[in-house]
Image (cartoon, rainbow, N blue to C red; front, side):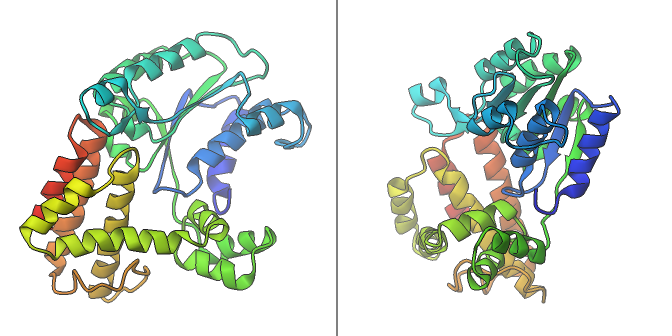
Length: 322
């Protein structure tokens, strides 16, 4: 929970005072540690030790291993309908939300608080979100639901209004660097990971464990950048060959978004974010055009996660507009 003491203390104090809400939206950019904090809170609420969470009792160990009967983690998956129709977007469908309702209908089996964590909650399709509203309208006792999302505005307003929002922010590089060094990462490696993490502890930790990732991301992005600056036929050929299954399309959009944002900040005289690639693809773009491109990327990301839109068609639109 590097750098999120305020959010942690807020939830802990609510629980200790008996004022814990039945549902929270944990909002903030990816890899900040939102899901990790929710899991640690489940340990805290169910830990049998005096100093919580101890990380050593049976409850804490079961939660760490993902085998705790009173904790349900819901993740996006390729729905059966998308497989049947030849689509490749990941969603949280209504069947998964019904399993949440069934899970919450029973009293705690082993601990004191039943906890549901819906990771990437913005991936709930419209039917799933409508079904989830029933859970919010009829909250059960001794239960809490955490909606983890980097796109809280994608959630239905009726869901948003029935949950308390806990916002997470990028963490200071010094805090992340100190944490990495405490885990045995060298000062040089920790500094390099922090520089590429954009204030996301999870990203920095992943980079320190897998130093090959930056080069892989650079190569993936530069393939897209070369297509953007090529003639129309090459762009369509790139779309046909691109692997957009699973979370690959989201990853590609995220890399492009980071690159465009870095170029935009640099053009505005704020070179605070390191560019992934030095290719000067967007160097001639105006500030307004860069802002429009960022908006388009965000719209495409939202539509492909919430609708039945084809990722390949969405990529074609992006390449035509970029």
